[in-house]
Image (cartoon, rainbow, N blue to C red; front, side):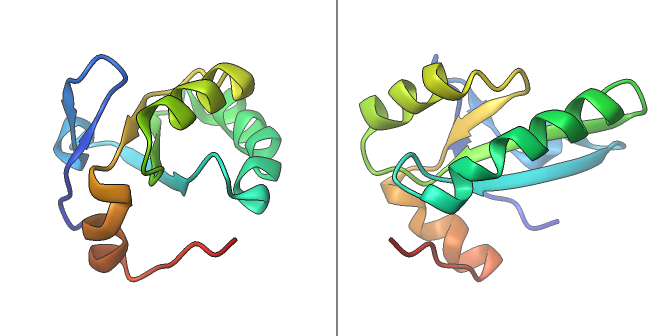
Length: 102
């Protein structure tokens, strides 16, 4: 899995190496992305089903503004690790070849 840079709400660096040896569900999202936010209930169901089966979840925000991300985190209340990619996620979007559109 390609490496990328992201940081927890408290500023700790987070990357895929933190999950080495486990199955990782990697979720990219943004506070402004309606389809991303609509998917959160499904992610919560999957998390509850697999959290004790050596499956880890990591949601990575590509929000440009930390305060928007933090507000959305509080609203969504996702219990698994969260991180924000720097620079609006440009590097991670290039690495994983995806775009989010509004």
